[in-house]
Image 1 (tube, rainbow, N blue to C red):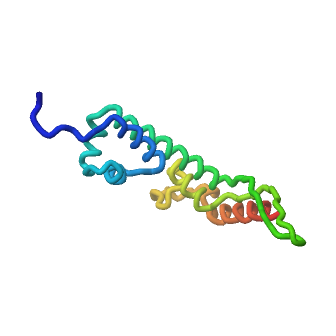
Image 2: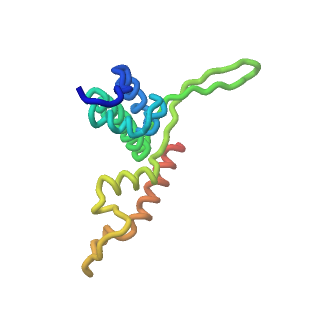
Image 3: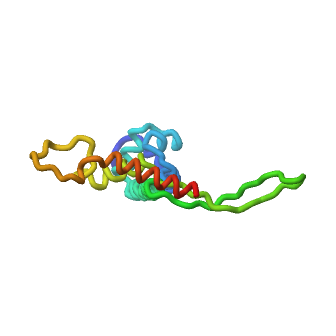
Length: 154
C-alpha cells in the first residue's frame, strides 16, 4: 500500500464536475467548488477515469451548445417571444416571432475557423494572377448583411 495522504476524491464529485462543466467551468472553478487545489483537479482528471470522463462529457455538451449558438447568430434565426402591453386599461399579451438577421462578426469568426484558407486575415503572398472573386469580399459581405437586415425589418 502506497504511503501518503488519503485522497480527498469522492465518487459524487464526478457528477458535480459534469454539471459544472456543462456550464463552462474551468479546472480552477472546479477546484473552488470542490474546495481543493487546482493541481488536485488536474490530477483527478488524469488519474481517476470516472472524473476525467465526466469533465470531458460536460465540456463537450457546453462546446456543442456554443457551436449551435454561434451558427444561429451567423445564419440568423427566428425566435418566439411574448410581449405584454397596457391597452385601454387592460394588460394584453401578444405572442409573436422575432426575426434576428445574420451577424457579420459571427459569420467572419465561423468562416475564419472553418475555411481559414479562404478567410484568414493575413493571406500568403499570391502570384500576380488574382481571382477577381477575392476582391471586394468585405463590401459584398456588408451588403449581404444590409440586405438581411432589410428583410428582417419587413
